[in-house]
Each structure stands twice: as structure tokens, then as C-alpha cells.
Length: 205
Length: 113
Image (tube, helix red, strand yellow):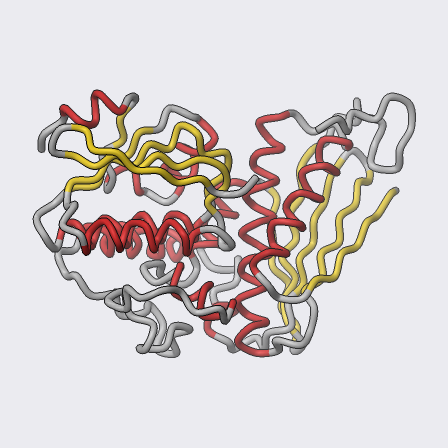
């Protein structure tokens, strides 16, 4: 088994880095190109969710991502530090399929509704302060936290997890008092020789 | 890969050509561009995503925001995308029902509701 662990400050730029690493390792694990695209998107969404939670609850604590391949599987675990009752963490992947559907319906409704104001958040404790309104057409502030929130202005909470569960067959969320871990697993055929190296590792990119 | 953005008129539409990655890091730039276009009276937008390499939920949020803005002026926002990996996220999130998605800029520019 080979493992790689990354800790990064909760900043949008690092989500991309984490995504790139996951993509490279997934290829090395012998995952086909179409599934590598799913790994890229799912890991990006999981990291993005963690970054948002950390920015709200623990901006000084790095987000942890552990990637490993073992027994023909490529596994990525993204750990956050958010308390279990926090609004985004609350809609864990333990949520029933009906809930995911509700999130996605909320997204579609938001997009289709004639109102020109941002939707009321699907949870009472909205992550987005009222000050970050779409009418604020001015230049974006440098504060990366505000950048994240303003970019996500129209999204109901939980869209990231809904995307992940739509992409990944094997996914679960383990919540503890100190945060949650999103665990995603893909079948790897091992032709690349695995993350650990080996002959002809298919890591060209 | 970073985000690239350019705009050009096409009949009564404004085409926004987007390339690279639309993610949490770059989405604010796209948002800014869409806000500026709408502020300047461009209410019929065609977003050409054929050069987009990656799109996450933040990018979706910005596109939804753009749609809301043009609709407030009875405008339209159409997407041009034939890439399966990008279309997938629209399908998963149910947004294929929300955005008109076309296979070419010409088709999108000629489309009426």
C-alpha cells in the first residue's frame, strides 16, 4: 500500500493543487481517463467543502487529504475540522438520497425562479452573510474567504456533496466531534503499477 | 491551467469565450465578467465553454448567477458545450433543465426561446 498525505491552508488556490495531486495519483493507480475526470471533480468538491468549513470555523487549521491505493482501490479521504452541527457539515453524506434530491431541486428552483435576489439559504444558519449580495458589482475583495462566498452566492448548501455522491459509487462521511472525513473510493485496475511506483508507472501528464 | 476570458458580439448576442479551469479560484473572474456585461446592457449572452477544461460547483454557481442577472432584464444565457466531462456536472445537478445547452456558437446565437 502506498499513501500520500497533503495538508494545506484553507485557500481556494490550494484546492487546485490538491486536485492536481489526486489526478496524478489516480492515473498512477491505473484508473481510466474518464474516471480520472471524476476523481478530479469529486476531490475538488470535497476539498472545496472542507476549505469553506475551515474558513468559517478554524481558518488557521490546515485541511488534510490522504490518498492511498490498496487492494486494487484508489482511496481519497478529506478531513475537515468543523463541528458536527455546523451548517455545511450537517448535511453529511449520511443524508438520504431524497435529501440530495432536495438540494438539487433547490438549485434548479433557484436558477429558474424569477427573483433577482439570492435565494434564502436552505439552512437557517447561512454561510453567506447578507453583505455579500449579487448587487455588489464592484471589484472583488482580496479576502479569499469573501471570494469563495461571493462565487458561491447562488448555490444552496450541500451542492458539493450532492455532486460527489452523483459521481462516486463508494462514498461515505464519518463525523466526529472534531470534524468529518469524506471518504471516496474507486476501483483501480493497477496497470499503472500503483502509486508506489513500479514498472512503467503511467504518470505522464 | 488558468482561466481565459474574451467577449465578442454575434448579432444581438454577446459571446463569452471561456477557457481553462472554472473553479473556486477562478470563478470570481468569470462572475466579474458576467456582472460587467449585464451592467453594460448585454442581456443576451452565449457562454462558449468548448475550451473549458474543468468546471466545479463554484463555476456552476456563477453561471446560475449570470442567468439570474440576465433574466432580471428579460435576457438569456445560453451555453455552448459538447464535452461529456463538463456536461456531466450539469446533468448530476439537474441544471440541464435550466440552461439551454447548444453544440455550437452559431446554433446558440440563432436560437430563440
